[in-house]
Every structure is written in structure tokens, then in C-alpha cells.
Image 1 (cartoon, rainbow, N blue to C red):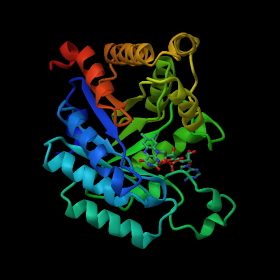
Image 2: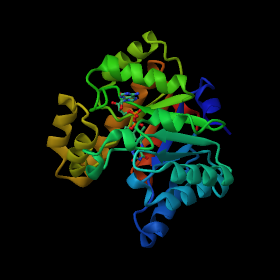
Image 3: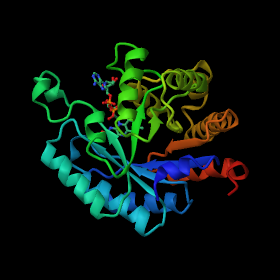
Length: 288
Ligand code: FAD
């Protein structure tokens, strides 16, 4: 099934993200976590792609299992910036042969050793280059309510986003954000710029204090005072922080649904307990 059909159904959807292990020895434990999350029957599940492609076989294996064994629709991520055309063509062939219909087309972060290299020699510079090679798939792309860190300003970022959509990207998933007003503002601006595809809101439940620093480092997301207070107060107590983090994410999601953002993707970080608690909190809203 194409994910665009789920997103356009008009009903509130809740989907989950998982990531592949870095090593073979960790595969079984990730597989078990993924199975538990799949048993919640989310609208779909996405499987991230490790930077550089070193774990691409695990992404494919997990995506395949989610779809074939657990019967949950799957979105396989793929990045391009540090890959050659031959490698990307091979990955696309593998995804197609696995019977997967949905691909998240991402540029990927630029590796340190590529930072100063001559960009004109790269096979792929932006996600839009990958979107053009994925025709026939249902294609998703990333977007940034708080502006991608490499963009000079939001206007420029939205101009490039529009190019990605015009090239064939059928839906967008946002970077995590902790203040819904940032998303509402962003949605207003992209709709004004003529981007009409569904936007899936990406929500990261922060359930332990160590996650906060890393999440902010990676995403550059703004931390509202309300959220900072919660981490300061409960960060030292793991059970309390889990409860508070799940409550904060639940509150964000309910506000999104209430304001017409019908599709929400939770960055579950391979934690079935977090996915389960959030889904339970939304059971009546989701009709589950
Ligand atoms: P792009 O859309 O290419 O944008 C990157 C920057 O280039 C932006 O500043 C944009 O404005 C600019 N730009 C675009 N086109 C042009 C142009 N023609 N000229 C000049 N500038 C341009 N990373 C992983 O490694 N694996 C994953 O699985 C993964 N999953 C993700 C899922 C989501 C929902 C999101 C939001 C991000 C994910 N990332 C993942 C991180 C992502 O790879 C990085 O954020 C990366 O820096 C940008 O990727 P992009 O696809 O958004 O890039």
C-alpha cells in the first residue's frame, strides 16, 4: 500500500520510526523491539538508514520483516550524499525487489571528510537528486519547521523544499519540534508557497535527560521553557522522566490532531514501551 493513501484518508494516523542496529550481534534485540512496536499496528513504520550506508542491509531486512511478517506498511529510508550513482541504483533495485513501495528520500548529513571537498564532483548534492531516481515509488522527504541548519533563511529553505515536492516527493515528514506553534507557522508559510502535499508531524518523546542534549545537538530544535522545567524537575528520576516525557509528547500530539494536523510520526528510538504508552493515551482518538 502506498503511504500517501493512508495520509490522505482524513483520519488521524499515528506511525512509528525505528532504526537499524550498527552490528550483526545487535540485530536480534532490535528485531525483537521492532516486533513489539509492530504489534501495536501503527498506520505505518519507517526504518532509518545509517549515514554512509554501512547498515543498509539491516534497514532492508527490518523493512521487509515489518511488511511481510508483521503486516504493517513500511517506509524505507535512503540517503544519497556520500554514495555513488552505482550504489544508489543497487539500493533502489533491492528495495524494489523486496516489494517495498514507499521510500523516504534523504540527502543525509555531509560526512566530515566531505565537508571541504569539491562539491561539483559529488554524484548527489541534495535529496531532490534522489527523488528524481525514485519514480514509481511513493516518495517522502524531510522538512524543517525551524529551518535546515545549512539554509541562509526560511524563505530559501522553503524554495528548495518546493523543488523537492515538484520533483515528485509526495509527502513530507518534519524534523522533531517541541513547540507546536513553530509547526503551525511553518505550515502556513509552505502552503502560501504552493506546497500542498501532506505534512507528517515528527514527534520525539524525550524520556530520559541524556536524550535532551543529543536531540538538541542533532536537530537544533528550540526547547520551550515548559519543557526545560520538566527536564530540570524530573530528569534525575528515570520513571518520573518517562512519565513526564510521554505526557508532554501526548499533549503535543492531541493539540496537533485538534488543530487539523492528522498525521503524526513518533520517533520511538526502538522503545516499545514508549510507543505503547503514547498509543494507549490516544486510543479513543485513534479508534483503537
Ligand atoms: P535536502 O532536502 O537536500 O536539504 C538539505 C539542505 O540543502 C537544506 O538546507 C536545503 O534548503 C538545501 N538545498 C536543497 N536543495 C538545494 C539546492 N538545489 N541548492 C541549494 N541548496 C539546496 N539522516 C540519515 O542519515 N538517515 C535517515 O534515515 C534520516 N532520516 C531522517 C528523517 C527525517 C524526517 C528528517 C527530517 C531527517 C532525516 N535524516 C536522516 C537527516 C537528514 O539526512 C539531514 O537533516 C540532512 O542534513 C538533510 O537531509 P534532507 O533530505 O532534508 O536534505
